[in-house]
Image 1 (cartoon, rainbow, N blue to C red):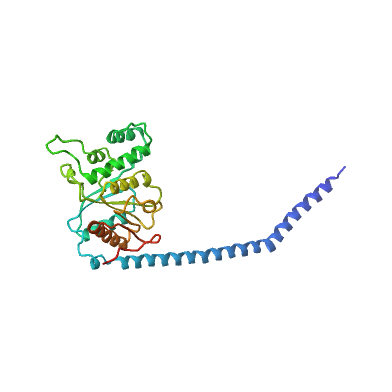
Image 2: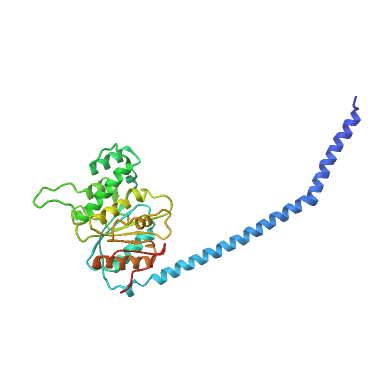
Length: 311
């Protein structure tokens, strides 16, 4: 039988071993761990400094790009004077892009007759929205949402390119543009002028230039291939003058798919509309498109020129 004294010695030995382990750990292991942690902290600090320097460099490049592109007043003397322009965008796009486009067009003396923004109701997330859009486009609400969106894009494109299409002497007919606005699939962006109901029939028709703008951070409310791209394709197909623009830092692509499969020659694309230089490309490109019928691709993405030729 093991004696009680043996148990006491065993317990004392265990505690001595634990104490010795803690002492050795403090002497040898802990300093090594601290040194390792310090090295990691120093490495992270260096990486942070490098990242900050890179951010500063990129910010400087953006500032220089903005300053270098602020030349519209020197290269354009109101070449779009009297040209009617409608901008179609969607909620959630980067505000600098819309602001830059408006500023550049107004500086070129263009007559911006309407700015229309696609709302999140166009995502057709509920049955009520699907039924409302189906009624406007004349389709069954059971159709796939992407079919309804594409039909709405086609309808809007034709409405802008051809006008209300009310025969002379006939009774007033429903205006699809008015219906899309009334059912809140489109809206006038906050802070920008609205078009009155009485003036809405004057928006659209031969000679109207349509500028489609898309691009932003995160996910779009409607994928470009479901609405904005079909709208641009239909505008080109029916012979309208159209420009498609996106922001330089957009998370989703709008311009590249149009460039990869161009719907026709009478189309302008600009991939950096949020920059001053992009505004220059938009204005000069539209002038060439209106006067010469020549489209083109401009910006900073891919093998394209930053701005159209100045001759």
